[in-house]
Every structure is written in structure tokens, then in C-alpha cells.
Image 1: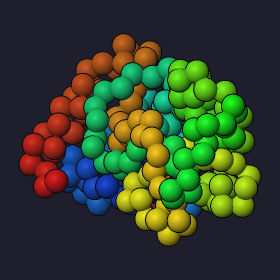
Image 2 (image 1 turned 120 degrees about the vertical axis):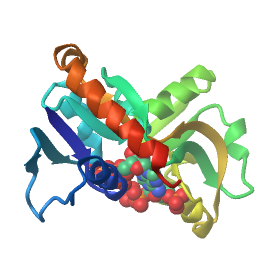
Image 3 (image 1 turned 180 degrees about the horizontal axis):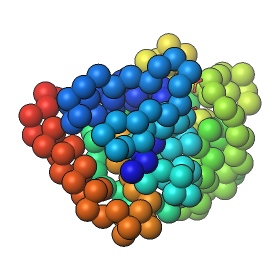
Image 4 (image 1 turned 135 degrees about the vertical axis):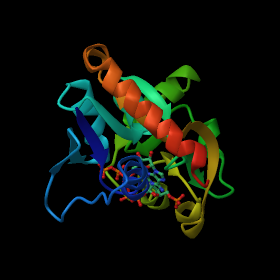
Length: 206
Ligand SMILES: Nc1ncnc2c1ncn2[C@@H]1O[C@H](COP(=O)(O)OP(=O)(O)OP(=O)(O)O)[C@@H](O)[C@H]1O
Ligand SMILES: O=P(O)(O)OC[C@H]1O[C@H](OP(=O)(O)OP(=O)(O)O)[C@H](O)[C@@H]1O
């Protein structure tokens, strides 16, 4: 069975869970992208690519943020909420300035283009979306956009830049996902692993 694990923020906590299940040290050596343990092949993949590997069945299962699955509209099965990497996706803007609410068209800077588009569409508010790849908070500060749609965790980045959360769009946490065909072909192995994860959660300190 092939398992795609994310690099980056949630990597450490995810590896910890797998360490507990397999009862041994789990570490991707510096540049090594694949390692095998007890018949499982683990792949070290960028958070944003986990959903793609799983959807295309290059991996049978994976761990990824719910924000990513939502943004990519990934056609995968969601098996379990791991409760890690908790954050929210919010509309944010300059503190005390709600003038964006009166505009005929709001200019929104974001990395999460689809989430932003769907949110303003559903509210019937015309929005022009500007895609950025990082440091999203800068956009309203220099007049590139009226507001941003971005991930908020501690709120520290917003505060430090004189901004505030205006509207929460969705809450996110890391999810265990499976490829739909793999779930049919390898149902027993996948459910066994899921049981082992749930077992770890019963004894896990929050
Ligand atoms: N402060 C935060 N900023 C970004 N993501 C966060 C934060 N807190 C929790 N998360 C969650 O952690 C996941 C992984 O974030 P991480 O920063 O490692 O990857 P990324 O930068 O979004 O992706 P990639 O490394 O592929 O470019 C996100 O998809 C989100 O669900
Ligand atoms: O609420 P906070 O705890 O401050 O976290 C939120 C910040 O973290 C993320 O950025 P990241 O650090 O991934 O950098 P980026 O701007 O390059 O995307 C996100 O895009 C926010 O900027």
C-alpha cells in the first residue's frame, strides 16, 4: 500500500502518529522521497500535491489539509479527521475598515482562488480575484486588493500587519484520504490501518 505524507507544517505530527502505529522511528532522510516499512511504501509529498497523488492513485491513501481538498475539489474519499493543523479560511482586511462591504465589486487577493470565488458567488457579491502565492496579507496594505482570503491560525500575521479577520469561510484540519478505487481494491488493508490510527487516537494526549 502506498501512503502520501505531507512535508511542511503538519509533517511532524503526522509522522508521530505513524511512529506510534508502527512502533518505530519515522523519518524521511534529508532528500529521500520514498521509504518502505512493513509492506507500506511512504512517499514524502508537498501538502498541495498529496490530494493529486491520491486522486490519481499514485498513492492509495494520504494526509492533507481539508482546505486543500476543498480548493482542489478533489475526488477522493475522506476517511478520518486527524484533528491536526487546525486553522480556518477567512476573509480579512485592514483593521477597522469595512468599506469593502459597500463596493460594487470587491477585489480579493488569495492563494485559495476557488474557495474565494465560491464564497463570494454564493453571497451574490461580485468579486475580482487576484491569485497570489504567498505573503497574501501584503495585498490590502499596498492597495493591490480590498481584502484577502487566507488561512488564519493564531491570527498573529494579521495582527502584526494591522489587519483583522472579517468573516470565517470554513474551518480546516488534516484529513486521512483514500483513492476511491484503492478503497475497493484494498479495503481490508485500508480499514485495518484506519483502525490502528483510531486506536492511537484513543490513547493520544490532545
Ligand atoms: N498558519 C497556517 N498556514 C498555512 N497552513 C496552515 C496553517 N495552520 C495550519 N495549516 C494547515 O496546514 C496545511 C499545511 O500547510 P503547509 O504550510 O505545510 O503547506 P503549504 O505551504 O500550504 O503547502 P506546500 O508546502 O505544498 O506549498 C495547510 O493546508 C493547512 O490545512
Ligand atoms: O494566523 P497565523 O498563525 O499567523 O498563520 C497564518 C499565516 O500563515 C500562512 O502563511 P505562511 O507562513 O504559510 O507563509 P506564506 O505567506 O508564504 O504563505 C498563511 O498564509 C498566513 O499568512
